[in-house]
Image 1 (cartoon, rainbow, N blue to C red):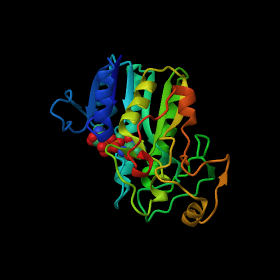
Image 2: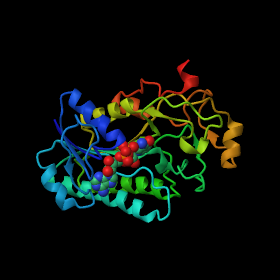
Image 3: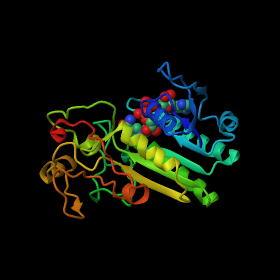
Length: 280
Ligand SMILES: NC(=O)c1ccc[n+]([C@@H]2O[C@H](COP(=O)([O-])OP(=O)(O)OC[C@H]3O[C@@H](n4cnc5c(N)ncnc54)[C@H](O)[C@@H]3O)[C@@H](O)[C@H]2O)c1
C-alpha cells in the first residue's frame, strides 16, 4: 500500500514512517518541516491547512495517516494552535476526498474527553465514569483538547458525506519515546496515569491503515496498566468529586480502557511505556 503520512517529521510520525516501511508499505512523508533523521525518506514539504497543495501529493495513495497537529498548545495566544490543528485536519480530509482516498487514520487524543490537560491552570472536566471508554462524551475545556474533539467532528462530517469512508480516530494517551520514571507526585490530570510506548502507538496506526471499516471509529490507544497504582481518594481530591466506577478495577489497571481497540484491531499494547514501578 502507498500511505501518505502527515506530521511525518514529528516524534510519532518518524516512528510511524519507519514502522510502515519495515512492514512492506510505501510511504509518502508530508510535513511543513523536514525530518531531522539523516536516513529518513525525503519529506514533501506542505502546509496541511492548504488543501489545494495536498491534492497532487495524495493522488495514487491508498490511505492517509494524519498525524500533523501541534500537541503542545500551551501558551497565550492559544487560538493560533487551535486554528492550525482544526484547519490542518479539515485540509487533509478535503484533499483526501478530492483525491478519492477512502481510508484515513487520524491521531486524536484522550485529551478530547476533556478529562486531562497539559496546562495545569486549565482545570479539566471530571470523568463521568471510570474506566473511560470511547462512549464517554467529549467535554473539552481547553484549546488543544478542543482542537482534537473538533478533528473528530470533522471526521464524522466527512463520513456523513460518503458512507464508504473508513476513518479511525486513535485517541492516544501520552506517547513515551523513552522510559520515563513517574514523578514522585504523579499528575492525575496529565494523562489520568496512563501512557503508551511509541512503538505500540505506531503498531495501532499500521493496523488501522491495513483495515477497511466503513464509518468513523474512535479507539483509545492506552497501555492496559496504570503508570502507578491509583486510589479513589486521590482521584476525588483532584477532581473534587468521585466518578462512578462502572466495573471492578484493580489499582494497577489503567483508568482509560483500550478494550475496544482489542476487539476491533486485535491491538493490545505490548511494551511497557517504561514506568519504573511497572517494569519490576
Ligand atoms: N505525543 C503525544 O503524547 C500525543 C498524545 C496524543 C495525541 N498526539 C497526537 O499525535 C500527533 C503527533 O504528535 P507528535 O507528538 O508526533 O507531535 P510533534 O509536534 O512531534 O509532531 C507534529 C508534526 O506535525 C507537523 N505539523 C503541524 N502542523 C502542520 C501543518 N499545518 N502543516 C504541516 N505539518 C504540520 C509539525 O511540523 C510536526 O512535525 C498529533 O496529532 C498529536 O496531537 C500526540
